[in-house]
Length: 325
Length: 251
Image (cartoon, each protein chain N blue to C red):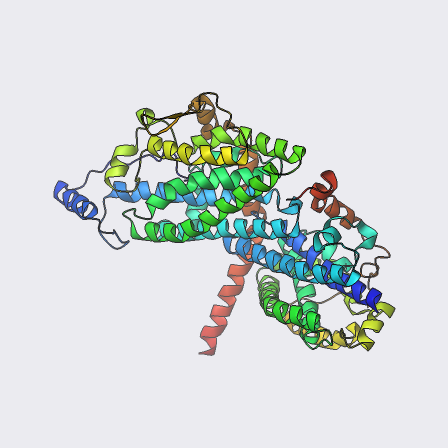
């Protein structure tokens, strides 16, 4: 779940066409790129898919941070495979966004100049190896909560990208849990490291679902269009209900004194994250915002010569081929 | 023989380990998304090959060490990789030039190793040769594209070649350890791979409008472990940090 606070666009088209469009969505039909769609639907989707794609790309950085220090060859290989998957997810998603009429380069420019966002979670640092476990277990776990329903989203290319992505995300989540399990059953130092990672990643993971429903102003139109399938609070509750017993199984404590099973509602009661911190992070003041964007800018700008060289070579080959014909 | 075989396997496994580590350093910061994916894929192949070579090395050594022990708990002088693969990534051009110079050798070496008298080595080589065929295809295409591309990309690739070419020669030096394995039919004589390498490299350089620097000077000391570059120690401080900081822990 890498789309937070995606602003829904208002739409001013012909009410009859809008009603017909809504009827298709209500009937469970998929909207395909060549179909008519309201401008607001298109713009909202570009923003959401773009934000999701950027999150996959920026999300390579906190995990890439540990590839060079993975403790064993096996862990190094798994982490490489995982980060490679994330780049692949970014690629499918940029392709899905391209079907809506925006190029990957345009989306990249918007990320780099701050017009587009990525998930707040990737602005937190990965400080120890246990963070690789916590990211897989909690962050990918939270992502799955949102992405599984998005396999049924109304826009065909997005739904199909989600099917592939979900398969890989569940492997990521399991490998994260496996790292945590090894550490939770390991030496006292490992156990301490695992607990520390949980302490730091718990609330930022809860923030991934976006603000509380009462403060989430963009949800209703997106839900009617089946771009957003569940409310933020529904998903957050589901995540806590699934994760709390896993933490118990690991022998780790979720850093929330109010966390308690509530028989009446059939779910856990829990504390809200500090929403002021959330707004700080999405406004650019998280622990790693500056570093993440600087790293992406450097990758893009310092390597412009590579892209230019590749394009020039392709163009020369094209001209040669034409001349030969 | 078992000492020479152990050393031979370290040479194979350390090359892929150190290069795989270096390529993995590109994660998330490549020029385009397709390169992020391709570089991670290549690093993954190389680390996978390392697991097989070093596991066999550990088995041959018979002292109860594992592939991970060999990777994570040896110091620089016990590493047997060629100097080329421990050179820093530099810019993308240097990374891809290093990759091409190694891939071309690696493929020739693996092709010969598929006929090794040691079945275990032949089996690993047969698996790796498929991956490395693809690595070479990519790295040579990229060297050609960037050499041919713009004047800037050509000049960066020429700079990369000037810097890295003196590290190519070490791959073809045959020493007494090699000879012992060559005589047992386990490995090809590295010096016999040189002509095919030079022919193939020349073709790529021609298409890329690049020329190797004059002279035959070659740095050495990596595969014998006699004198690595300063870069290796820094690489090891990262790669081995966890195993050094938390001895004996399972991950």
